[in-house]
Each structure stands twice: as C-alpha cells, then as structure tokens.
Image: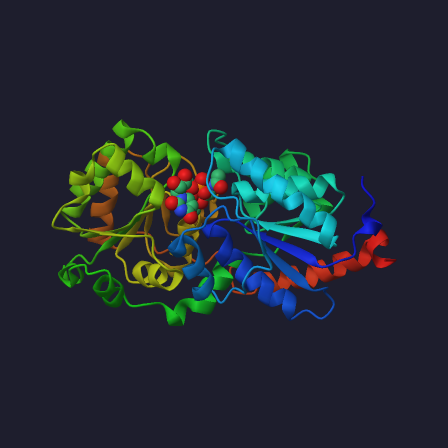
Length: 387
Ligand code: UD1
C-alpha cells in the first residue's frame, strides 16, 4: 500500500455524468454539515458536458460549481477512461486528499477509483455492490472493479451485501446506508415541475395530458437497446404500438437521438400520441414521472425513482442490478418482448399495476449516515489520525 500519511488534505468527491449528480448533491450537503469531516472538494471529469445533461442539472440540484473540471468529453470507453485517469492523476498529487468519494458506475467512477487506489488514497464507493451479472454492460465492469478497489463500500439495498461477499470483499468494509438518490428525490419532490409546464415550454401539444389513460414516460439510452438499427427499430415500433393505447412522452438521450437519425428511424417516433423531448432537467423529469400512469425505461436510476414514487415501471432490459425495485418496488423486467410489454401496459391500464413499498432505509437520510460513518472511519485511520 501507499503511504496514507502523506494524504491528509480534503475529501475529493468525483462526478462525471448525469446519474452521478443526484447522488453527489446530498452527500456534499451532508459532508458540509458534519463538523468532524475535512473540507470536501468537487471534481467534475467532464464526461458529460452538454448544457442540459450537465449545467442544468447542477442548478436543479443546487450543486456547487466544481472546484476542478477535467474536461475529458466523449470518446471510446478506453479513451474516455484513460483521459479521466490522466486528468485525475495530478489532482491527487496536488490536493493529497484523505479519501476520494466516487458514486455509481460510470467510466469516471472507475477511472478515478483506479488512480486514487494506486496512489494509496482510500476510495469510498457510494452505491456499491449492485450487480446485473451481465458483463456486456460497461457499467457492470465499472461496478466490479470499483468495488475491488474501494476501502469503504456504502450500499443501497441488501442484495449488494451478498454480491460483495461472493466476490471476497471484507464485510467490515461494507455498510448498508440506504439510497442517496432517494435523498435527492425526497428533498426535491415538492419543487417538481408540473408536466403541463414542461410540455408547454417544449412547444409540445398539451392535449396528450387529457387522455383518459393518462400518459407514459419513456427514457432509452443503453447501448444494448439503441446502438443496433434492427434492435432500436424494434423497440421504437413496440413503443409506437403502446402509444395507441397510452400516449407517450419520450425524453431522448443524445446517444438515442443521434442513432435514430443515423438509422433513419424518425418516422417511428413521429406519431399523434408521441411527444419527443430533449433530455430534461431534474425537476422536469421528477414532475413527468410523478404524474405518469407508467414509465418505460432502460435506466438504472429511474427504476429506483419510480419505486420511490410508487409509479409502475417497465424496464426494457433482461436483468437489473437493483432487484429490490422488482421484489419490493414497482418495477417489472420486460426485456424487448413486444407481446409481454403490451400485456404489461394493458395490465397497468386495467388494474393500476404494481404499487410496491418503499425499500428499507430509502428514507432521505442516507447521505447523513454516510457523513457520520465516514467521519468516524477517517478518525480511526492511523496514518490519517496522526497527520
Ligand atoms: C453514461 C454512463 C451511463 C449513464 C448515462 C446517463 C458510462 C459507461 N455510461 O452513458 O451509465 O446511465 O451516462 O446519461 O459511463 N453525449 C453528448 N453530450 C454529453 C455527453 C455525451 O451529446 O454531454 C453523447 C456523445 O455522442 C457520446 C454519447 O452521448 O458519444 C455517449 O456518452 P457517454 O458519456 O460515453 O455515455 P452515455 O451513453 O451517456
């Protein structure tokens, strides 16, 4: 191991992409309120850089401006990961942090964990132990490796503990604290933007909100669903069929929009009951989800948000790393099977679908528990305590 005693500077918190922001916002707030913790600094890797995927969400979540932005931008996974590592390396030398906090499973998470661990700086992983058991997902690789590198692992659900034990992680490093994303959701729920306002601002017809069945919300961006023309066209054709019974509001990720154009599939999202929006702000997405009849998605975070909002969610994937949302929440895995998807939609329209219940410790206080535990943990580190 490296010399931990060299590192007694601030806590360095890393974000890179959209799903990181709603996790880091409550953590930074809780760290600031915990007097036993050193100062926290925010480093943005620049993995996401679009105004709407990025700055707008920072505003919605009242995230402070990052102290540093590495500006890495897009690239292949190898290039993006390597660029984050290259950018983060001197940051560790300069700041000598007492620990590096990473969240979730994006390329920036793994890249910064790897740099920190090799320099002997303890890595703290928030949302540890989730496993889809599907290594064709880039996020699964990021999760597996980040957890191997982490000194402290904070988990959101009980399944995570079992996954980590199977991988030989020392149980003393693992702490079940609840879900920081739900901290954000509960803190912002009252400020959610009404769907009528969101549609109006986008110049979309409001008539969709008067449909007796209500409306569904769609988000799609997984490479497995959107990167191959035959798959994407099949998924969009299914959604078009769904829209005949339930109007759909689709918030399109840039990757998905680009592929729809490249594969010439625009006609499939151009129906009378389909509203296509650009990526939305946090408060707009919250408002759209909260009032929806159901949500169709391949996102990880939205599976959890719909469970917390008690809105039925059909996940267009074969697996989930968040099984508590299926076992206790409102989530149903439907893959891409058109019959199954239509049957599930009809079931929701007839019977209201799964209502579920709030999973254990998804109570809005996960970040506080992290701050309090981390303060004690840092005090126990001999090299740090003596510094
Ligand atoms: C990343 C995360 C994924 C997360 C998603 C949320 C990894 C491996 N994946 O996927 O887990 O659910 O973010 O959005 O880290 N692009 C823009 N503007 C941007 C960023 C990206 O237009 O600000 C476009 C680029 O064309 C880029 C593509 O989106 O090539 C993909 O971006 P990238 O950051 O590589 O991964 P995501 O698919 O967004």
